[in-house]
Amino acid sequence: MNISAWVWVITLVAVLAVLAVDLLIIGRRPHEPSMKESGSWVAFYVALALAFGAGIWFFAGGQYAAEFYTGWLTEYSLSVDNLFIFMIIMARFAVPRQLQQKVLLIGIVLALVMRGAFIAAGAALISQFSWVFYIFGAFLVYTAITLLKEGENDEDDFKENVLIRWAKRALPVSSEFGTGKMVVITETGKRLFTPMLIVMIAIGTTDLLFALDSIPAIFGITKEPYLVFTANVFALMGLRQLFFLLGGLLERLVYLNYGLSAVLAFIGVKLFLEALHTNNLSFINGGHGVHWAPEIPIWLSLLIIIGTLGVATVLSLMKSSRDRKRELADTKV
Image 1 (cartoon, rainbow, N blue to C red):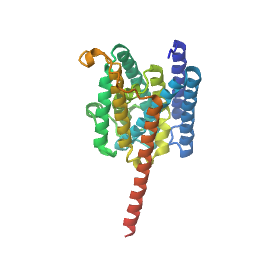
Image 2 (image 1 turned 120 degrees about the vertical axis):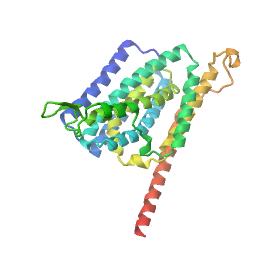
Image 3 (image 1 turned 90 degrees about the horizontal axis):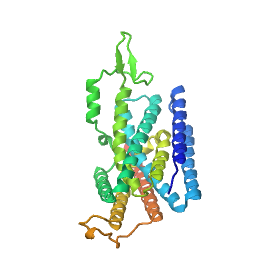
Image 4 (image 1 turned 90 degrees about the vertical axis):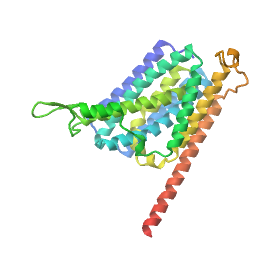
């Protein structure tokens, strides 16, 4: 897939334009979006991603379109799980509802920047060293096992890291968020950071950890840097509105971690098989490819990912419904 420089430029300009519009809307009128507003924006971004995939199908063929859709779905699913951690961060630092949009948008910008850097580094590594797929595959399987052990999401999933603890201890921080600025000047002329800075550090460092999982996962689906980047962009762009649309529903997706664990393990195994197929490490099969290693087609990957996430979602909602009915019955007794 040969992507010319001008296509990259147009893509980046379009992303920056969308971010600028978001910043303008939030900057002029900070507010908590309604369900209707959030739903409309999420539907818009999903439709945009579907249309973009159709464009890839028209200009580059069905194979690349399927890779984009599979990568986008995978990244979107991982992003939904990440929303739960964002929710914990918001609650932990008591971020006012009208400022949460700003926090999420800045977090998305940080995520795009960091993922862009990881994508560039990953693409460079893959082009030079095909054996890096062994590392990516092993890391994804390890992440899948970790998710499986953690089970359901809870507040213990977020722990303040060294940078957050240092910032809270070393920086002069006010007790109020105010209008959401990073810095305020007191009546005595003293310059203080607001808690917004601490929240941004928490969101930014969390995004960094998320990127470590998501980038190897999507490289297990497509090796095309342009598709990796655009799939991440479309997965992240509607994340802010999805946060407000899902709301309490996130807490009902109790089996989402198990579904994501299965998806990451599947992609990890897929990467390992591809690494065997294109092997050039001398201590494995004498440096030759292991040709009996099966290659999993992209259409099968898409079906497995959709099926796994669908089953996890349905089972989650069924369990949440049973638990709610049981709680109601207990209160009546």
